[in-house]
Length: 394
Image (cartoon, rainbow, N blue to C red; front, side, top):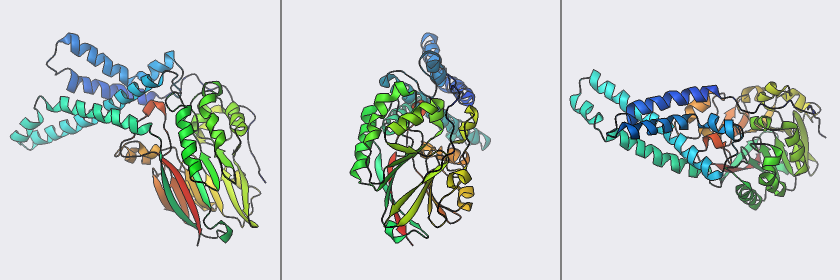
């Protein structure tokens, strides 16, 4: 039995996904890099000037591309261009961090009157070397970001799980982000890797696509080939709203997915019942669509059946645990993208960013995700994943 609380349509989404903070921060960092790295180079102004403009263009490339080709959520330019822009943008962020660290150390050396240390930190080759390292890491990080994800297997013990479900295998995919960067060929490889694990159930916890239904039709077609005895259950992430929400709901269902929008379904085995519930994403408020509502999602559910909740964002884990959820599967964070940056991402997501957490008697698992948004397509020390969760009875 499935109870649904859904809207039949959505207001037209804006042409551009507004990210003013990203632009402001990017410009500030770019100006800092120009000041501390580009301008001191022993090169003619005719070289340093264009280099500085290139750095500023990289900082604003999301808005530039959105102005002429697609949106910030879904840049419709060739894959090679996306890879180049993503590598350059990642390198810009990294070199800004490296320069900040060097300058902080230089300031500390001066304050402590450590002349030799200060002289070493002022060497002319040091900052260009930091720029070169950042570029290498940026290129490598994007290659890691667009790689086919590896499998991560975990076991979760659930109190009250019927013994009929002991050993039940749930495959979680999240943050696929099918796009001009992660195209149909990549999606097909993810599907093949998933099917090879022979799960009992496949769940997809949001952000399947970036772009319109017509633009992504070929890229998502392989998702219809996901195979599991108990089918494929999906929920929405924030990126579905940036495209054509209502049309995507129809398209996902046409691919054989059961999409839960503040609703639930039941999986049965040998007379035992397991409830799978799913909620919408908070960005729905921008589009006049239903906000996440776990109470509505669980209305009419068997009170004796353990609840597995699909919630794209992990931040409401405590509230969900208080309502009796035994296992929450989430994504959204991409694991923080880069080691160190995960501490910032964690603060915006209730303290959860990657992996397993025990939350008031509930297990929360936050997947790093299979893919990522083309606008920030790097992973450094935070690998992508396909997650296989094996349920165990206590």
